[in-house]
Length: 184
Length: 304
Figure 1 (cartoon, chains in turn green, brown):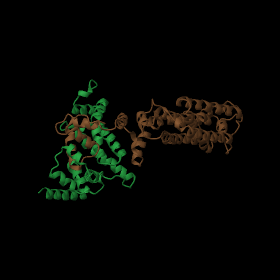
Figure 2 (cartoon, one colour; figure 1 turned 135 degrees about the vertical axis):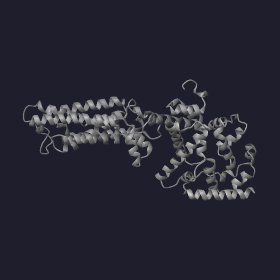
Figure 3 (cartoon, chains in turn red, purple; figure 1 turned 60 degrees about the horizontal axis):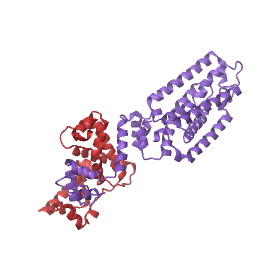
């Protein structure tokens, strides 16, 4: 693994990590830590908690790399670990001080005012779905994001957002209803 | 940061940049996030926009923690008692808090106590020499060579915490050396946490050993101040000279003082009398002052 580690596929690196190769762990970190950090940062306002979750992600990989079955994108596999480490870090922090310093980083306020220039630059299709999504309340959108985009269960999403699993379930239900209404 | 060209047919560099800066609305951000796990080009472009220092710092911590293998029994127990993870790992990795070190310490103390007990049972004068009736020094009735057998205990027992502190600072022995070097905490705080834990853990067996001796009960307490004074002196001196030299110097000085006092008073416990305790208190205060004054110079091996 030591000879040009840069040209080794991600999946091979994960297998090497499972065999205890520290170089492979370092290389995976270099490839994935950056984008994982950005994506985690969008889900938690505290930079400290995000960094702890990032560290825990790669330590979890170091100890449990054998659980990677070799199918699917390594990127998606790592994100699955990362979002759950973030949940753990957020929960530990809530336990430490009951003051909930974490607000789910909501996008609406600044996001809705994205400049016209940005809209053009983006070039992302802003069809009905985009409009419908941005019209959802932040709570409903967060519930949808956690369950659909991050692939969390209702219980996990509840832990991340600090509400009971049942609340997530009902919020997802309401969000689906609103989306359907907006799109038909 | 400039927009590096993204080798991706789906997303433009501008979109990736907007996502990194948090300027995308929910729908667009979701599209980016759904695309990211499968697109190395976009991931690389995004990673290039993250603060490199931040990534490097966390990388060092990850690799150091990965090298630690097992946090150990003590660290897990501490964590369950509500001690924050980073402190638990720090303490669990302290060389002089590990099981092997504590086991060695117990063995040494057991041998010293056993030898003293044996000497006492063979020769009642030795027991008498340890000090009876609450007096701080008892002059041996006869045969001044007999009390020499006790001297090793009086020299060694208070040095146990000193040895623990010295090994706690050795980068060679510390598996968490790289972790500690990268930890974003103040050095004086790190010093306090580790020293208090180490001194506490080594004072207990030393005190028990003193109680097991055929002497008065206050012997265990009499060890306390000199032991603390030596630890503080070593830590204070380590801000001036290399840590190992500081510890060795303090140990040599202690041995000389105890031996000289014992020879002068003709009793092994001479250095533990009122005068000795007062001196130890003064040295302790001076050493703590030195540490506080020179706290910016604290740079032990394991602190990087």
